[in-house]
Amino acid sequence: MIIYSSIVESLARKSFQAVQDHNYDEVLKGVSSKNLTHRFAGANSLGGVRHDKTALEKWFKRVGTVLPELRFEIKDVLVSGGPWKATVVARWVARCTLENGEPYVNPGVHIIKLRWGKAYDFDVYEDTFAVTAGLEKQSQSGITEAVAPQIVS
Image 1 (tube, rainbow, N blue to C red):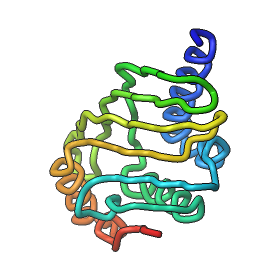
Image 2 (image 1 turned 90 degrees about the horizontal axis):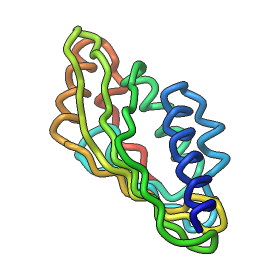
Image 3 (image 1 turned 60 degrees about the horizontal axis):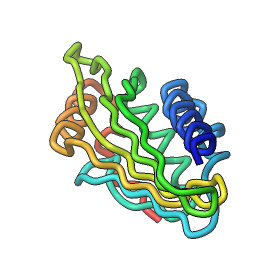
């Protein structure tokens, strides 16, 4: 299982890099179409639950629109289980400079379940107050999608 864990850890790190690079098609290649659930906490334009890849793609594009310079510093990636059922825990710090020049810093954790190499269940835990405050500041700087209704399905 050590080899499998190393492969999955590498893929998880590459997925975070793909989000930073706005390469959402690459991220979505690793996502299952069956029984998909993506949860992002918070009463803001990024919050909510998505159950299909179309909504998830729209959500990723919104992230790129509202926080275009977002970067992840990956602290840890832990993998448990085998190819038939694995859990990935990724601990990170998200950073960027908001349009008004203020820094945005938000530590968080992804818990991702995989089945046969495809992610199907995502829980994203972060400082929801920091997300909401950052999005409000982005809106005040003219990024209207920062306060748009949640993308849910």
